[in-house]
Image 1 (tube, rainbow, N blue to C red):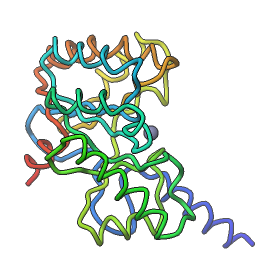
Image 2 (image 1 turned 60 degrees about the vertical axis):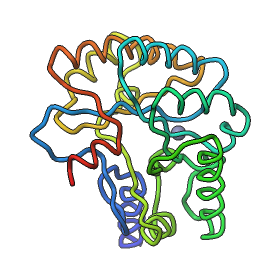
Image 3 (image 1 turned 180 degrees about the vertical axis):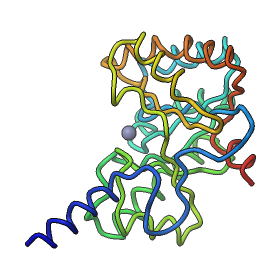
Image 4 (image 1 turned 90 degrees about the vertical axis):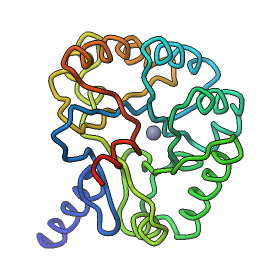
Length: 224
Ligand SMILES: [Zn+2]
C-alpha cells in the first residue's frame, strides 16, 4: 500500500514536472551566458484580446511565441494570421486543450497533427514546438513527441501561479528571470487582465536589466 502511494506520488510529480519527461527533449529554459529570454503566451487566439497584445509587442519591438490551440485557430483564423504576419512564433498547444494523460496514442496524434495542419494552413512556415496543456504529460505524449523529433517546451518563470496583481506579476517576473529563461503568461481571456497589464512593464524592466528578447526557436538555436 505504501509502495503504491509512493509510486503514485512520484508519477504525479513527473506528470507536472517542467524539467523531466520519460522520452524526448524538454526545455524549461536554456543554459547560456547570454542575456536572452523568451516571452511565451498560452491559449487562444481570441478575437477580443489579440489586437491588444499585438500592439504592445509591436510598440516594444518584441517577437514572442504563442502556443495556440487548434480549436481557437479554427474559430479565429484572422487573429492567427495577424500573429503570423507580425513575425511572432507559433507553437502547438493541442487541439482541444485537454490533459494529455491517460489518453490513447490515436488521440494524441490527432490533437497534435490537426493543430499542426491548422497552423500551417494559416501560413506559418517555421519549426512548430509543442507545449502540453497545463504542462502535463506522462508516457504516451512524450513518446509520440520523441518519435516525431518534436521538442517539448515548458517554462521556468510562471508568475501567475504565485501572484495575482499586475504589480506582483511584474515584480515576480523581474526577480526570477535568468539568462535563457522562458516566461509563461496568459493574455487571451478577460480574467487575465492583470497579466495583459504586466506585459509592457515586464518588457521594459527586463530591457533595463539588459535582456534581449528571442522567440523559443531562437533560444534553442543559441543552445545549439
Ligand atoms: Zn494552456
